[in-house]
Structure formats: structure tokens, C-alpha cells
Amino acid sequence: MSQLITAHRSRRKRLALLLPGRNEELIVATTIQSALAAGLRKRDIYVVDDGSTDNTRTEALTCLPAEQILSVPHGGKARAVKQAIEAFDLVGRYEWLHVADADSVFCADYFKIYKKHLDDPRLVAAVGMVQSMRGNWIALYRSFSYTYGQHIFRRLQSWLGIISVLPGPVTCFRTDIIKDLDFTTGSLTEDFDLTLQIHRKHLGRIRFIPEAVNFTQDPRTLKDFYKQNMRWQRGFFQGVRKYKIGLRPHRIDFGIGYQMSETLLYFLQFFVFIPAAIIASHNWLTLPFVLALDFIAMFILAIIAAFIAKRPLILLSLSYFYVLRLIELFAFVQAFVEVIVLRKFKTNAHGWETGSRRYKLSVDALKDIQ
Image 1 (cartoon, one colour):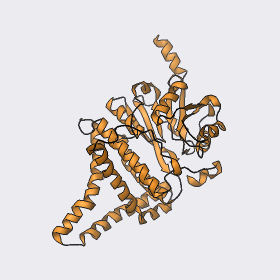
Image 2: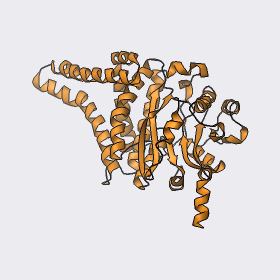
Image 3: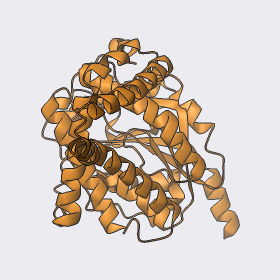
Image 4: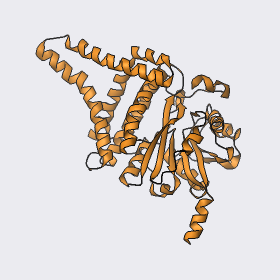
């Protein structure tokens, strides 16, 4: 029997790509074409349409045969992924499954790069580098934060074995752990929930592959930026509450605990500690002095990020960096109060909040957004 199982596994292909999407008619065809250009064969690409009300399926059919596209009733991303895994028998046919958002654009040789890093037997999941497409002022800010955040913090997380989230566009699972994952997460951020499951169940190691870059679309308005951050933060605290982060002596608890404390400390610094110091000392020069020091640190990081990402315009984001940073901080605090204190958002409404954030791209335009 063991010989038959070994023989069956040896016949499995190396890697499949699954693109779950809802109302992605503007971008899904470009995503498929970019995957082909990045080194994946058409027969290894699959799409699951989560109850779209637009022409997502029709657009996917311009690139893939019907047998590689599954349409399911709207039930959320994680459930759609699970249904597609079963319908396409991806566990039985592939060793690794890459799941990417349907608004993704892969860098050249993305999948060739990925495959080179999947031989470690301890490895059960891997994540690539998320980068913003070249776009508006919000995209510049995201490009800045993504670049320094991943090159510094995610590298450190990978080394320590405490990667805290499997980002939607760049995540790869070893298929033999899929049976151990509960895709009916009931979370606003399924990716974070699945990551915590891997850590809590001690399924294996997660690796960061910074050379594998995926370009993703960002919000185009301040309203959408705020809505996206609120969904991320609410989903984050759902996971913290569900998996009792901070109450167990696991490495991931210390990692997420540090992440939370750093954000909270930044908030308290500007809205509690500094105002209290000014009132106590009657020295109003404290605030501009602290802001100047913080701006110098951000300026140095922006120069480094602009150099690494090869995007000099990142420096322009410093002119409004603190506005967007404050919005993110308030979203963090608001979500903490809602989810942890008031115990709201115990269920998921299965919302894929793409809305006006999507815009159409041609294959010829790909070189201009990378």
C-alpha cells in the first residue's frame, strides 16, 4: 500500500495556481495572462468565481477552458477556495497550491522563482512579496509601507518562524496540509485565520520568498482606503480573539503581541504621552521636536524603500504619510474596541470589498505598473 501511495505522489504535478474572485471582470483576464507570462502553464491555472454578479466567468473563459473554471454560490473567499480544491482534485494532482487574488500581476519568472524554494521538507507554506501597482497617491504610500515592512519585518518573521499572515496574492500551500485546515473560518480576513491555524496546529514552517513579487491594485479613494483598513483590522482582532493570542506561550503569540504593542505604543506616544508631557512641562516645543525626529527616520526609510523598489516617487508620499498613517492607527483602535471590548463582528458577512478599487489593465500596460 505504501508503495502505491508513493507512486501516486510521484505522479503529482509540482504547482497549481488557483484564482478565487468575486466581481473581477476588469482584471481577471489580465491576471491569468500575467501568470502565463510568469512561467506557469495554462493547464495548471484554475479560477473559482464566488457568485459574481458581473462577467467574471465570461472574462476568465477568454483565457481558460470551461473545465478549469468553477462557479459557486457566494459564500466568501475561503469557502470558494475549499470548493475549488475539491472540485478540481488539486490535492490529489499537485504537490503545492498557490492561491492568488484575481487582481494580481506576477513578476517575470515568478513561478520559476517560487518552485526553487519549495524543497525544504519542513516547509508547509510560503509567501512572496506583495507590491503595489504603479498608480495614484495611495499606491505610492502603500508601495513605501510594503517595501520597508516586508524587507525588514517579514524577513525577520521568516527567520524567527513567526510569519503572522499569508497575504492573499502571494500564498502557497503544501497540499498535504489542506486536510488539516478549516476553510469555514467565519472571519473577515480568511488569510490571517488560516495562518493562525498553521501555527496553532504546529503543521510546519512558513517561508518568505522576497524575490517572488506580485503587484496588486490598491484603493483609489480615501473612502475605500479606510474601508479596506477597517476590514483588515476587524479580521485581525477576530483572529486574536478566536485563537486567544497572548494567552499561550507560542512564538506566534510573542510575534503578534509585539506587532500589537508597537502599533499601540505609536498611537499612545502621539495622543497620550506627548500631550501629557506638554501639559506637565508647559513646553510646546516638545511636539515639533518629536515630530522632526520621527520625520527624519521616515525620510531615511523612504530613501531606502525608493531605492529597493526602484520608485523615486515614493519620496512624495512623505508629504501625506502621517495623514494615512493616522487613518490606519484610528482603524486599529476602532477595530480593537469593536471586536475585543464590545465583542462585535463574531460572524463574517462574506464581503469581498473590491468595488471601485478595481480598474481595467491591458497586457501591454503591465510594464508600466510594475
